[in-house]
Length: 119
Image: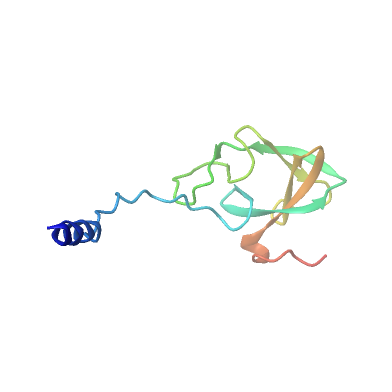
C-alpha cells in the first residue's frame, strides 16, 4: 500500500502543468532617436555649441517599437521636448535637443545610415 501511495505521488508530480498564458514582451529600439519630417535622427553624445531656431516639439513618446506613432516621435525624449536646428548646418543632416543641461546632436540616419557620420 505504501509503495502504491509513493508511485501515485511521484506520478502526479510528473504530470505536465499547463503553462500560463504568454504575455506580450515589450519591444524596444536599438538606439535613441527622434522621428522628424519622415526621417529618423539618432541621438549622439556630441555637444552642439550653436543652437539655432526651434523647429518643433516631440508629439509622441513610446519605448515599444510596435506602437503606432505619428507626428514628431521619440523613443527617448518625452512629449513636449523642444527640437532645434543647428546654426550653420542643414536640418536634413542634423538637429539638436537639450539633454542633461547640454545641447546634443541627433544625425539623420536616413541620409547617413546607422553609423555616426564622419565630420
